[in-house]
Length: 125
Image 1 (cartoon, rainbow, N blue to C red):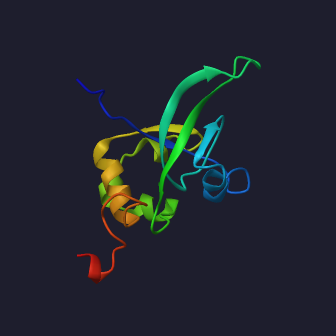
Image 2 (cartoon, one colour):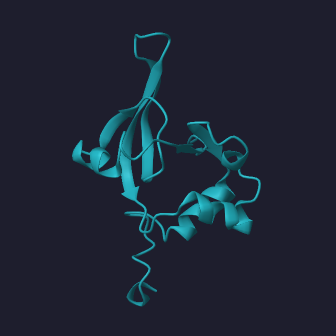
Protein backbone atom coordinates (compact mmCIF):
# COMPACT_ATOMS: atom_id res chain seq x y z
CA UNK A 1 0.00 0.00 0.00
CA UNK A 2 1.38 3.45 -0.96
CA UNK A 3 1.78 6.41 1.35
CA UNK A 4 -0.87 9.11 1.36
CA UNK A 5 0.19 12.22 -0.59
CA UNK A 6 0.51 15.46 1.38
CA UNK A 7 0.94 18.97 0.00
CA UNK A 8 2.93 21.76 1.65
CA UNK A 9 3.78 25.31 0.76
CA UNK A 10 7.44 26.21 1.41
CA UNK A 11 8.24 29.93 1.28
CA UNK A 12 11.39 32.01 0.75
CA UNK A 13 12.46 35.45 -0.34
CA UNK A 14 13.43 35.56 -4.02
CA UNK A 15 16.92 36.86 -3.24
CA UNK A 16 17.53 34.07 -0.74
CA UNK A 17 16.71 31.09 -2.98
CA UNK A 18 15.17 31.11 -6.44
CA UNK A 19 13.83 28.48 -8.81
CA UNK A 20 16.97 29.02 -10.88
CA UNK A 21 19.07 28.12 -7.82
CA UNK A 22 17.01 24.93 -7.43
CA UNK A 23 17.41 23.96 -11.10
CA UNK A 24 21.14 24.82 -11.20
CA UNK A 25 21.77 22.36 -8.40
CA UNK A 26 20.64 19.41 -10.52
CA UNK A 27 17.14 19.95 -9.15
CA UNK A 28 18.16 18.65 -5.71
CA UNK A 29 18.76 20.77 -2.62
CA UNK A 30 17.97 20.96 1.04
CA UNK A 31 15.40 23.33 2.42
CA UNK A 32 16.25 24.88 5.76
CA UNK A 33 14.09 27.93 6.28
CA UNK A 34 11.47 30.30 4.96
CA UNK A 35 11.03 29.86 1.23
CA UNK A 36 8.70 31.28 -1.41
CA UNK A 37 6.76 29.13 -3.85
CA UNK A 38 8.49 29.15 -7.24
CA UNK A 39 7.52 25.72 -8.50
CA UNK A 40 6.82 22.21 -7.33
CA UNK A 41 9.29 20.04 -5.46
CA UNK A 42 9.11 16.60 -3.93
CA UNK A 43 10.56 15.78 -0.52
CA UNK A 44 13.23 13.12 -1.07
CA UNK A 45 14.58 13.08 2.48
CA UNK A 46 12.40 13.91 5.46
CA UNK A 47 13.47 16.19 8.31
CA UNK A 48 16.92 15.63 9.75
CA UNK A 49 19.09 17.60 12.16
CA UNK A 50 21.52 20.14 10.74
CA UNK A 51 23.60 19.81 13.91
CA UNK A 52 23.16 23.47 14.87
CA UNK A 53 20.83 24.90 17.51
CA UNK A 54 18.20 22.16 17.18
CA UNK A 55 17.68 23.23 13.57
CA UNK A 56 16.77 20.89 10.79
CA UNK A 57 16.18 20.59 7.10
CA UNK A 58 14.62 18.42 4.45
CA UNK A 59 15.97 17.57 1.01
CA UNK A 60 13.75 18.48 -1.92
CA UNK A 61 13.98 17.70 -5.64
CA UNK A 62 12.58 19.91 -8.41
CA UNK A 63 9.47 18.55 -10.14
CA UNK A 64 8.53 21.55 -12.28
CA UNK A 65 8.30 25.31 -12.46
CA UNK A 66 4.86 26.95 -12.50
CA UNK A 67 3.93 28.00 -16.05
CA UNK A 68 2.63 31.32 -14.76
CA UNK A 69 3.48 32.80 -11.36
CA UNK A 70 0.50 33.24 -9.04
CA UNK A 71 1.00 36.15 -6.66
CA UNK A 72 -0.39 36.45 -3.16
CA UNK A 73 -2.89 39.16 -4.12
CA UNK A 74 -4.39 36.94 -6.82
CA UNK A 75 -4.60 34.02 -4.41
CA UNK A 76 -6.31 36.14 -1.73
CA UNK A 77 -8.90 37.33 -4.26
CA UNK A 78 -9.74 33.81 -5.46
CA UNK A 79 -12.96 32.43 -3.97
CA UNK A 80 -11.64 28.86 -4.28
CA UNK A 81 -8.81 29.66 -1.86
CA UNK A 82 -10.90 31.33 0.85
CA UNK A 83 -9.79 30.27 4.31
CA UNK A 84 -6.35 28.99 3.21
CA UNK A 85 -4.07 28.88 6.29
CA UNK A 86 -1.42 30.99 4.54
CA UNK A 87 -3.77 33.99 4.69
CA UNK A 88 -4.41 33.58 8.42
CA UNK A 89 -0.77 33.01 9.40
CA UNK A 90 1.37 34.61 6.66
CA UNK A 91 4.61 34.45 8.64
CA UNK A 92 4.69 30.66 8.61
CA UNK A 93 7.38 29.30 6.31
CA UNK A 94 5.77 25.87 5.98
CA UNK A 95 2.01 25.67 5.50
CA UNK A 96 -0.06 22.50 4.96
CA UNK A 97 -2.10 22.70 1.75
CA UNK A 98 -5.40 20.83 1.36
CA UNK A 99 -5.68 18.97 -1.94
CA UNK A 100 -8.48 21.24 -3.24
CA UNK A 101 -6.31 24.33 -2.57
CA UNK A 102 -3.33 22.61 -4.23
CA UNK A 103 -5.42 21.90 -7.34
CA UNK A 104 -6.75 25.47 -7.47
CA UNK A 105 -3.27 27.04 -7.18
CA UNK A 106 -2.06 24.72 -9.96
CA UNK A 107 -5.04 25.78 -12.09
CA UNK A 108 -4.31 29.47 -11.50
CA UNK A 109 -0.68 28.93 -12.48
CA UNK A 110 -1.50 26.90 -15.58
CA UNK A 111 0.12 23.82 -14.09
CA UNK A 112 3.81 23.13 -13.70
CA UNK A 113 6.67 21.53 -15.62
CA UNK A 114 5.92 17.94 -16.46
CA UNK A 115 2.41 17.68 -15.01
CA UNK A 116 0.81 16.60 -18.29
CA UNK A 117 -1.32 19.73 -18.57
CA UNK A 118 0.51 21.14 -21.57
CA UNK A 119 1.53 24.76 -21.91
CA UNK A 120 -2.00 26.10 -21.79
CA UNK A 121 -2.07 27.01 -25.49
CA UNK A 122 -4.93 25.95 -27.75
CA UNK A 123 -2.64 23.40 -29.41
CA UNK A 124 -2.46 21.51 -26.13
CA UNK A 125 -6.22 21.12 -25.59
